[in-house]
Image (cartoon, rainbow, N blue to C red; front, side):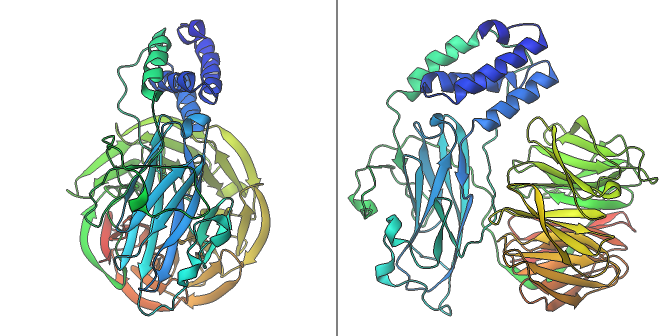
Amino acid sequence: MLTEIGSPIRESRLAGIDGLARLAWGADLGMAHAARQVLQQMTDDDSRAVSAAAAAALERTAVRLDPERIDFGPVAAETPRLVADVRVEGPPLAVAGATVTVSGPGLRAMLHDRTLRIMWLPRSDWLDGSVTVRGPAGWAEVRVTGQVTSAAPPVHGPADYGTSRGGEPAGLRTYDGGMVAGGYGPARVTVLPAPPPPARRQIGTTILVAILTSLVVLGGAGVAMTLLDDRRTPANPIVAAPLPSEQPAAAELKQTPAPGLTKVPLAAARVKSVARPRVIATVRVGAEPEGVAVSPDGRTVYVANQNSRILSVVDVASRKVSPVQVRNTPRFVAVSRDGRTVFVSMYEDDKRTGSGVAVVDATSRKVIRYLDTGDMPYTLAVAPDNKLWVPIHSDGRLEIFTPGTLRMESELPVRPNPHAVGFSGDQMRAFTANHESNAVSVIDMRSNTVIRNIPVSRAPHSIAVSPDGRMALVAGYEADTADLIDTVTLKRTGPFKVGRDPQSVAFSADSRYGYVVNEFDGTVSVLNGRTGTVTATVKVGKSPRTVGVSPDGRLAYVSNGGDNTISILRVGE
């Protein structure tokens, strides 16, 4: 394998990556850790194919959490505690020497074997925190949310809070080995980006040094539990013993010195959305902006400008705009879940020429490759498993690309003609708005098969699934209405009257409200996310096209194709 890794022949190095991936999945922890270190170095190989293959191998051998979000929902103020279990997935290295950190008032967490137990002792009105598992196989986070409300009836009695499998709290159900409030919650995992690699080079015998280093790193590593108080200051971690039928209180566990971890939060604390947003600023971008996407950390907005072949990169703090030139006319934008890659769909006005996807490195702000697609790729999106889904408007199908390598994994026929796709991670369902069929296709993501087509208002142009995974919002472009679909029962409600030519939809970060962009009226309709009642109509720029919402729920961004601007709305406080 050393010969293959150090070979000047690209194919040999690619074969070496396959061997490293097998080692990274092996039971020999020292060798597995060393293999991942070498794979990390090979992501900066001179060959783009080798670099991409190494990145994909790293992703396959990284730690993952299932489910990736816990929503305890509204609970009564007198609730003593709630617990939920999360399964830790990945190779044996994923749990070897792994440690746990938490961020959020009243949160507790403990890792034992492949079970991550999360406990919430409600102390404040809102919980928007995270639990991080970090070790030699990288790290992943579970976002944990909840709300204390005196108006809500108690969902648990004091006797309901056992931590064993036989004592799951009321309101939580078993879900593939974990518990999720009410069965809802989007799948979203954030993986710590690797440190900046050194200058490009081929990898030689550095695997030997990596093995020795790994043996030292893994020696004596333990499993830990970390506590955070209400000031978000980490206390000493606590060593986890095998789980008894009833978990002891945190104070009863033996404390050990902290290992000095650095916590990287998912995002700033999420805020409560408002029924009547307001425009707070307007920023000039390129010519005829269409697609809009916000980075996972909320610091950057990406705008596809159709008449200038430019992707505008907007720094949220300074509102400075930087251009990225792409090969063909950009239409819509999506961002990878780690925020490192931006995807831009392209096609020319004849709906055939130049069809494809530009792949942009978010750090360097340069196009690193182009993907070939069918004719007229429309509103593309990144799924909970990081695969890229591209609706092919003119061909009536979806193209699905694997993460890392970005090879087309499968093609999925749907009704004509798919405009957009949204995901309910907890239900493992995808939804496409099929413009010329007046229907939404429901796709089982386990088998990539269409399980139902739901009639909706005329010319469904856009679809969005709420962050809690419960509802889908659909814009009926020719009907001047919007519809809601329950992602569990697949029952449609509506239509609800909005403005003229509703072009794009999105949800607030807390799922309370939906936003419908009305192109002809130059407005955004704000709807109650459960009832469809319009709570406000907000005037924006000329010919608005698309809306994107920041992950923390404070701001929304609307592209105005008629005046070459984006409107910034305050949607949360």
